[in-house]
Length: 170
Image 1: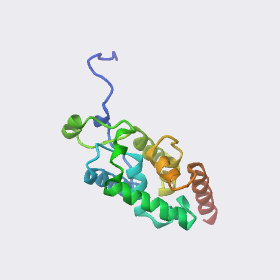
Image 2: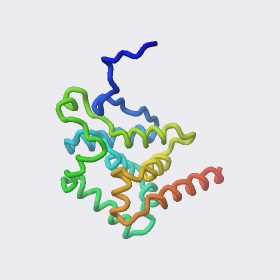
Image 3: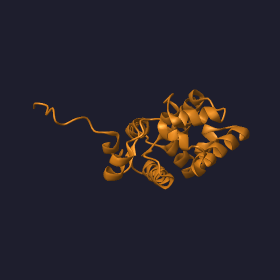
């Protein structure tokens, strides 16, 4: 079928929302609400990380196993959610505000990639999403983790180890 030159690739505001199920659907909905409440132009990996940490207590223990890390991480997210992170809007391909209003809230490419990656895994768990978020080195989620003195690569390793332990426990 020939390609219509008048049709271009979808803009950031036209990207479709990933289609998670189960606990991941709840996390995605929370992230979307968080972005809407903040007036952000799109759902980014920071919104996903924040929603993920809110949705499952065990995720915080895997992401930040030391109390000082957990405190820093949650403090950082609280600051971001009350407005100290407004400059974050300029990253991860922030959608154009006018097209955003007309087309609905978009997902940043890294956020959609992380959520899709977790959905495609056989287990599709919250730890899969945490690992996907931490594995994106230039994402806001990874930057947030580093800001709390947490190594994103170590988070990925802990997620994989936890998943393996859960599989062998069956």
